[in-house]
Image (cartoon, rainbow, N blue to C red; front, side):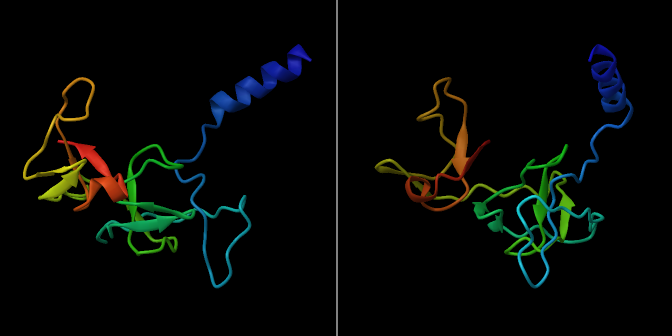
Length: 133
């Protein structure tokens, strides 16, 4: 048993997971939950926000299933994606609603440490999409 575990650990160290593991392929019919096909990155595309991926709506670049943040190039992820650069991340949306106030700039309200943040949509109360400034 110990030898098998040692061999498994050696294999894991020699063969790290591919950075695209977990990115599903979607053709005309939805794939089974566990199927994945690896796609090359599209370097000259533009991120589309918000985008749907695995039945969730994302308003910014995500790290889901990857080593680095990425975004979809379609409103509904269809296998076309790219790694996010500094200019690809979703911008803050001003003004935005938070609780009962309208904010015209980043705020520390609601953060335990007062770190500045902003909403990625006009209504934070509804969408709960945000990022640090």
